[in-house]
Image: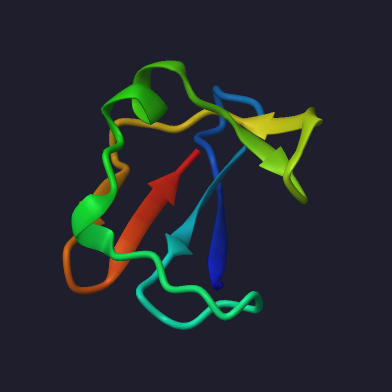
Length: 78
């Protein structure tokens, strides 16, 4: 998984993180997530990004620039 960290404008504090969060490639558990089955509406309005799947370590919230590419996977920006 590749992520890119982008500094916000001088008037804003913090950073943006963006990249492919889920792809149709085989994962470490031997599973594949089919991007065609990913729904992100609730994720964008109510979701958050956490560190190492720990819900107590929230590091950001998704922006409206998140999307699903049916061939590449889930792209997030937070």
